[in-house]
Image: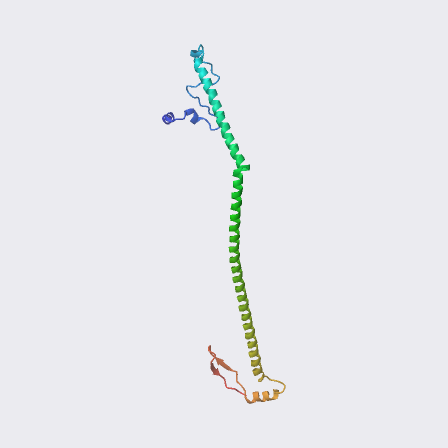
Length: 208
C-alpha cells in the first residue's frame, strides 16, 4: 500500500489529511514574498542598457510622425462618416431614400389593395355558398316538417276511422238488451290450454 502511495502523484500528507482542512502545497524552486534576497545577489546593482543618443532622436521623430499620421487618418475617417451621415439625413441621399420609400409604399399599398380585393371576392363567394346551403337546409327542413305533419294527420285520420269502425261494436244503452241476448244465445268457453305458439291443445266441455 505504501508503494502505491509513493508512486501516486498526490503527496501522502494530502491523502491522509481530513477533507475539511485547507491544503497549502509548496512549489519547489520558488520563494514567497517575505523571503529575503539571495546572498549571491546582494551586491548586484541593476543598470539599464546603454542608449545611443542619435538612435533615440530618430526614434522620437519617427514616433511623433507615426502619431501625426494616425491622427490624420482617424480625422479623415471621422469626417467621411459624418459627411455620409449628414447626406443620409438631410442631403441628396436622404431625398433619394425618401422617394424610394414613397415609391415602395405606393407599390405595397397597390399590392395590399389587390390582395384585399381578391380576398373580398373569395369571402363573398364563400358567404354566397354558405347562404345557399343554409337556404337549402331550411327548405329541406320545411319539407320534412310538412311531410311529418301530413303523416301525423293521416295517422290520426286512420285512428279515427278505426275507432269509428270499432264503435259499431261498442255496448251502448240502446243495444244493451240485444247484446245480452246474443251473449246468452252464443256462449263462449274460455277454459282451454294453449302451447308456446298460441294454439289450443286442450279444451274442456262447456257446461251450462
